[in-house]
Length: 179
Image (tube, rainbow, N blue to C red; front, side):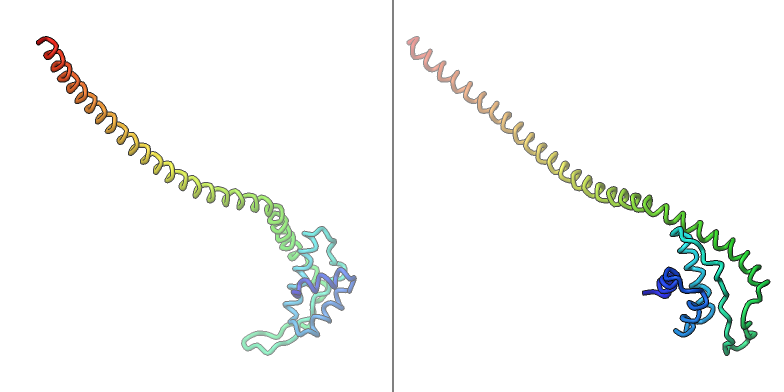
């Protein structure tokens, strides 16, 4: 189970934001990651149509970390700063929610489009296969046609030879009867 799923599960169980933060801190998760998880949970809940748990939102106190060339972070956000943060986050959150809603709405369309593309590829392969088979059939028919023409021509020549022989026989027979 991902941390986001865990946070959302705790929210669904009615666990307060403060308890969720405390639980995540005990797991060794940084305050920045906790804030990000809470924001992501808000977005997912909004996309799913669930209400925001904004009333309980308490930014995670930032712990000082030993990072060179950085100023120590504040222990907590004052209420006034939170309101400014909330206003800018609301716009960003709304944009992100709108993007996710559009993405969710487009999933069935994209799925159908992928199915159509797959059908197109399979159909093209089948058509190419049919074209090659048709070409082979045409070649066989041409060969048969040529063979039939040759046989008819040979048959015609044979008939001519038979005709000549019959005429010779006829001439011989007529010549004998005259004598």
